[in-house]
Image (cartoon, rainbow, N blue to C red):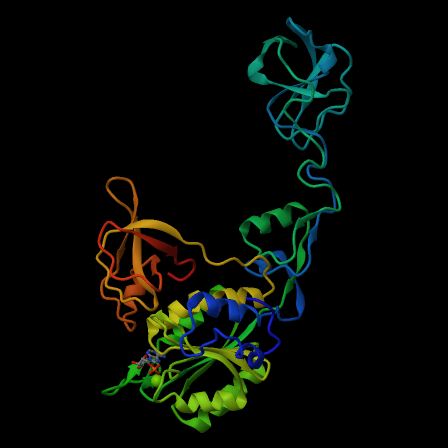
Length: 424
Ligand code: AMP
Ligand code: MG
């Protein structure tokens, strides 16, 4: 993008802007230009920080390791005692254990038996591995070929006191939990959770617990959305099903934008029944685009309503998951304060299936990545790719991404693949 747009209105004046057929990459770029982390932080106990984004650097209060210590089981020696080109015999003055240091001082001609992690005794400066010595009673015989300071971990080698151990903007994962705990820190400051209000639209939808009459279907989108949002660490506000009624929809959009940072609706943004949604959203806020040149997920709206970000997802259950993964996931991560959010990586694999594809749209086919008999990475599609068939998501572990200009794909061709991280 050339310059940061100030408003959707300003952006919509750009030459290449077509709100009814936005290319996937362009849509991603446009959305990104409007994202700023939501404000607000909270202090939480470290276990509760799992999955949250750090709002402050975690500073090491001390050197890590705190003392010079041994990287091996062996003998702590004074390097100057060792004969450069012959063997040396040293007296063992005692033992240093991890957590129980040798209290004395090693004098000339003395060494100390030392365990991995034990503090290096005063007077010594080098560790000789136990495999490289011969024990003779209370003495050890050490051969030539050692280096001053070998097999030592220096105080502050991993982290100096005052240095940032984990930078703000990082998601706390199990590795960070351990790292923070290793510093003796019990609480951290994290960004507050992003509040996401969502609802399904459609006269045909019924909720679980009701018997579905002829022509009615169970609302599944609120469940996949609940799952995807919860995995991302959002605070979810499930507003239920809203009928295809302009007054009810208007109220739902108003209520949602008043209480949440992000509003997500599913269904009803395609042409036809959607015309009133379009009018409504143009009245309540600004919409950047309505349709994306992709399959599944062509109807996808993004805009702002009263300060909240708005994603109008398609109604079809597979389209909901695909558009969420391709656009909403990264947006939420940025809103949550995460830094360095990079596009979901892709890689190449051999396609074992024949794929039908018409040029003109980016396609995301559901597939299984596996190791073929000749040891290569291969993918095959998960059966019928209809955008209402959630089974094709449930059976999949990746997407095959077919670029806009691509036509049909023959078995044996290379295709671009993207793992479904956290989706399935
Ligand atoms: P729409 O975009 O509203 O025209 O919906 C497209 C298709 O998705 C229709 O077949 C709907 O019945 C279906 N659909 C819409 N919303 C949901 C939902 N929440 N759960 C399951 N299917 C849905
Ligand atoms: Mg509908």
